[in-house]
Length: 195
View (cartoon, rainbow, N blue to C red):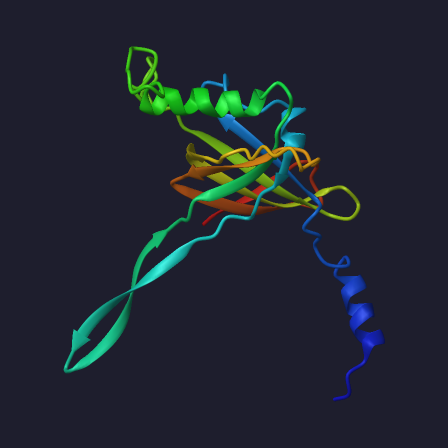
């Protein structure tokens, strides 16, 4: 079969032209809401990713041979890149969230910081949704990241010779994610598939 660029372009156009990595939106919500990102703040999430998952092979030795068996599913740290605003609003929210979990940065703990559990029960976790948009601006697919909390707050480099905007990363640990697609026939109806 001969390679036909025209046939490839026709099939790619029929598939919507392919998903674009620059067409996405992210929401990040903390369980109490105090450290959730506002609609304006989520625009500063410059980069994120559809989360990964892994099933590690377990080696079982039998009759002199190493056989692979399915292990447990694990999830890597989910990382987002944020453009720093001059008020440090997002960074302040993440630092406060981390204080709730681990205590103040000087190591002290109190009833407000460092106990890790809300007074109403439950943990200071949250969730995030990464939504893939189509070229028409409509939601196409999404990843719902569940029971997450910030585990890494990246450095901010300052430099007299650099005229770019400041950026930093935030790493989140989480329990699992679920994915789904947006149903075409029902407005804003998400078909959620557990991972």
